[in-house]
Image (tube, rainbow, N blue to C red; front, side):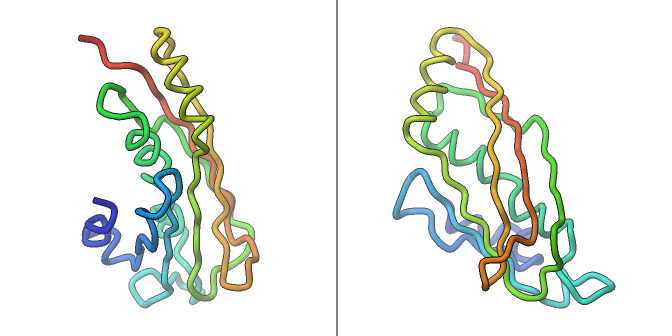
Length: 143
C-alpha cells in the first residue's frame, strides 16, 4: 500500500516519494525532491510541500501496527522551518514496537490516547531543514 501512495496526486505533483516502507513495519522513509512544482519564490523547498511530506505517516504507521480495531486520527501539528531546503530532503518516521504496545494497552483499557511524535526533515548533508511535531488521537473502536 505504501508504494501506491507515491501515485497519490498531491504527493506525485509535489515530488514526494516513499522510499522504504516494507523492510521494517515500524519505519517509513520519505524523500521530497526539489523541482519547479514545489519551489518557492526564493528557489527553495515550499513550506507546504515540506509539511505535506510529513503529514500522514505517523498516523499510517500507528494504524498499520495497531490494526483495524482502532481509530487513529491526526489531531494537531506544528512545523518549524530551520534552514532552506536547496535540494532533496528526507524524513524518517519511526514508532518503536514498545510505543505501539503501550498505546494498544491503554486503548484496550478504554482510554483515548493523544500520543505526540516528532520528526526532522534533513537535507543530503544531514542538516535539519525543518522539525515537525504531530499529535494523534487513538482509541479502540466500539462495537
